[in-house]
Amino acid sequence: MAEATKETTLTEGLKAYIEEWKDRPGNLIMVLHKVQEEYRYVPREIAFEVARLLDVPLAKIYGVISFYHFFKMEKPGDNNLQVCMGTACYLRGASDLISELENLLDIGVGGTTHDGKFSLEAVRCVGCCGLAPVMMVGDEVFGKLSSDKLPEVLARFSD
Ligand code: FES
Image (cartoon, rainbow, N blue to C red; front, top):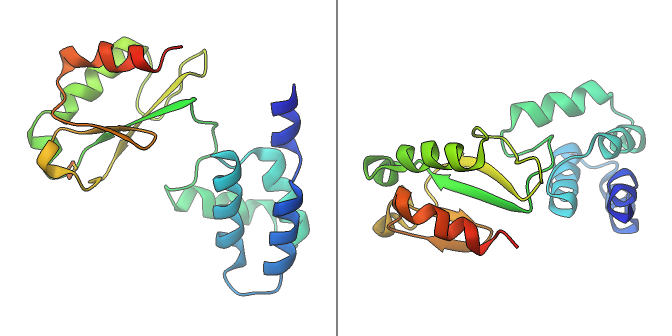
């Protein structure tokens, strides 16, 4: 249960960061960025702590999180599948990739599999348009993808 503890307690690094930013303008966004960098999303307990330490209402924090799509309130899967829906990828069938992944994983866009292994996201251009359609898994780029290649890609991340 070490992970659960980690996600309900502020790390020393974060405490120091909040202390450093406490009285500066724009601190809430900076702190939330740091939290997401640490946990990959903004856990509820941590949002509560941030509200307390920065002395802002929790509702303001959730307002910021829901306004900026960048911030996540749900924990992403171990492998976050990011299918590019930029123009080049869209024109080369990115939506077919999304549909096939939804079928294979039995989740929708924004969802996470029950075992926590995969989550699925549709993202803007990731800058490899020459390889369209593209999917990123962490830092890895899978280009010129087609639906029939997806099981093979997923298998690489299934252990
Ligand atoms: S549109 Fe997909 S990488 Fe640019």
